[in-house]
Image 1 (cartoon, rainbow, N blue to C red):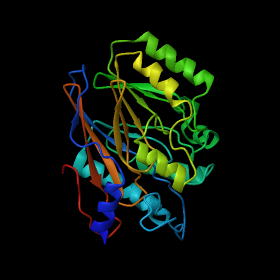
Image 2 (image 1 turned 60 degrees about the vertical axis):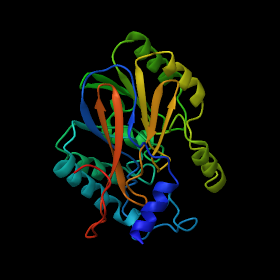
Image 3 (image 1 turned 45 degrees about the vertical axis):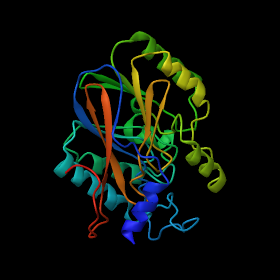
Image 4 (image 1 turned 120 degrees about the vertical axis):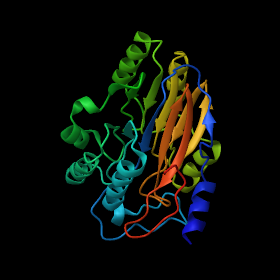
Length: 283
């Protein structure tokens, strides 16, 4: 049953298989892309909307899954750093859950960088992480990463102006943008979101942001979450990837390797507590 579920889960997504060519940036490094942990204290899971619903969340095990992921990253992957592209918690405003998730992530043996999601909410996020973790930048291994607040489904004027100033101010450093809402999805995923979940899973105003990023030749990639399945597209010379949701079927996270400017993404399964699982990524 587990193997069938994994096969279905991978079939409904467009995984980033193999290296995706990107020009520039000679640094070689590896980071983990974790997303959509949806932590909450729950005694039962919501009913799937249909058989093997890829958006069905294992909320009962949400904290245990995050703990297992942190242990797995520390013991087997040992990346240079880790990003979390939003929805650390399931219920907006659940500050105790967000604090608990933060404490678990603090057990990582590497630096980690969170991005706010729509389920997190700006108010709770600011309370736990501080306003400085809504929109911010960091530099790792010669690359600049820009974390952008898309928690309300779009990018407001002030945030867009801030992003534009950052991009205009440095046209040389290889840059990746981190968002919760993706800027682009394969047509099948976007159509499924509209039909099955009555939601557009893509960022509102995404095309304008795509044009803004494409004007700057040093923007190499956009890493996002929200849609709960792994996807990979190349738009305007930019690699756009979404990570699987840790809390949903398969319980995977992504490992991104950057070598000579090329991105290679693989996926690693986190077993349910006490239940062995196959693994897709490097050991």
